[in-house]
Length: 414
Image (tube, rainbow, N blue to C red; front, top):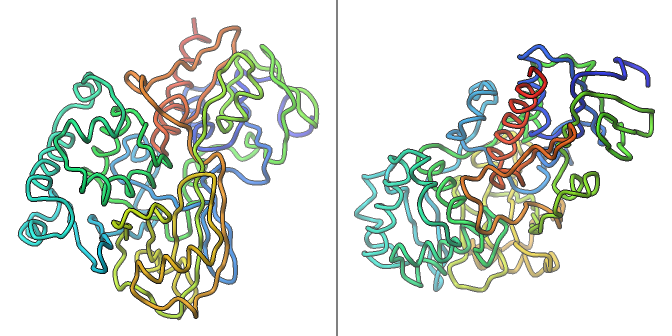
């Protein structure tokens, strides 16, 4: 193969967030490594396309400033994040109802008590839940009995109204899981990050995140456009030749990892589709996530991205992103009709920019997940990393890659 040596301490297969996080730790430890990525750019699912002056991420994604590994690897101010508001709006029975963050905006508590979704007891219990996950140590939270997300919400005493009209549409967009089968341990960590941090997007799109993680690394060890054919102990065979390493770390997407590592169980994946529309005027004046509280189960959420990050749209235009959960995505006209109802505005003059269908958007994470740390060592010098080995999130991908690299370093130094 041309370029760097074909032999290294570690060969990393996959240039997404997990692979890049692993490379950062290996590089800091002084091990020799090479990373190969099949696509023509780094980032995996965290990437952005440009169209007519709009920035379209590969599906609606957000960064949470409370993700621990993110804050250790990336200079967040340098990303110039534009943040969404900390609450949500819910369209129910023809009206918009606001639910604010119970910890970050205590001054809105009075209006929250009068919100037309859920009950007063719901809001008190949910505020208590948010306070507990924000204050208690993570290890104590992960030691709690593990059930599904839906079961955990019911056990918390939350009413059917709050679950069905607010939490199911909101969390289904987060987990790509309409049934809320996701482990309560994943739920706890997600709620903890929402309680402690802000959510937003980089000014240049989600592609800026992998660029920032990769920035300290030597570019000649990051090789894009290299397709891997198979992986065996000590060897990676690509279209361009063969690479050898004392350790092989497969950090591709979950399905790709199972294809390369037959001993690895193939994870069940959740589908998510994002519809991008350009609007001449913003249908909402604020950067707030809008949920469908009428239980129609077509649109999970929608948001005017350019209200939070104006650089996502050209001057005088506005970008709306809408998420639909599940493999059976409806035609765009059906989604547009739902958006007319949700925003209470005519959408006839909107332009449909793109529909981004991700049949394998996120790995399913039903219980048991334990403490969210699935094994990364497969034996014979083979390792695996990715959000399917931790939590289905950006934090999970970064943490898994970092953890796998640490285990490799310890093994190789013995």
